[in-house]
Length: 428
Image 1 (cartoon, one colour):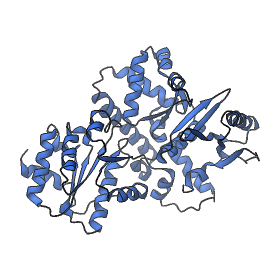
Image 2: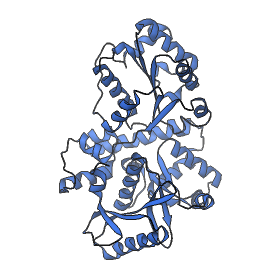
Image 3: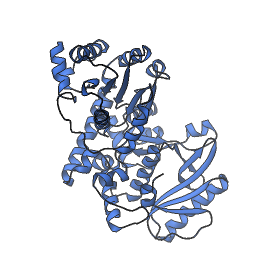
């Protein structure tokens, strides 16, 4: 590929000679990235495919140009561009950058954006070299693998980057995309209706703007197939696709539940070792999140099952084999995702009964949280209260909350009742 062909390909993606559609602004991330612009460190965005990383990067470029940065001082490289296929290595990355410098000769600070950079072997050496040479350049990278900045790469870039995980839309962002006006603490049937749609179809941006429900399901299925094929099967050179598809289907069907590699071995005859490896692949591709059992003993944490959650309830619903709507499980899943967006590490705990989530500050357990779709049933309500009361006896300094969808809270001196809309919509 010669220099002219490189520039012609880059022109399709960059702001140099055109206006680029950047979609709906996601201020939750843009505000953070704007603060990071003042720092010399490389900015890394990771997250599941189609969660909006590339769009956020384009929005950053747009904001820079609005602040009078010349378009020629920005370079966006999409490494999933078909014209670049077969050339992705450290040498090719250097040639692209040199071609850009030759054609546009940018003066002043350069803003470099490397999108889906895990496709380029050795990219970290290129980024570290620019950073260490104190070149007047700000580097952004994105990737669809949680291991993008781990292992040898993490060692090479140690102290040179800050990172953010980009999740599918939160419910607040979902309402913003839909241009729905709401007032915190005011719970209307309309808001509950939107929340029901959010539970069913999730928060991938493309899905939220699609009106046809059949099309939503088709697109979500394609997302799943793409992630499975490109980020798991191809990346890890897996030939036994039958086993891995059985495991992911079983796991998606059992979200918000305890799961272990031993259970997989028992149900499917897949070795414990392979099951653990597949779980790692699912988590690496951001398909699933796992939270551990809480114990001050590391050994107990390791030997207890983990609870599993989907990165998006819509994705789960589109591809899982489910017998019912599973509203309670879906509700618990979106609560966990909200904790993740807020960078609150969650655990679960189990005594005689299970507590859905345990949060801590340092070594101190700070909150015990159960999630229940309906508290109208007295038996179900009593069960949730008993679990939290048991937890409060174990963790005496913790606060307890019961997050619910429908029903009337009861007065309890030690448990706070929180409606799901209040939890999702009141700013932190």
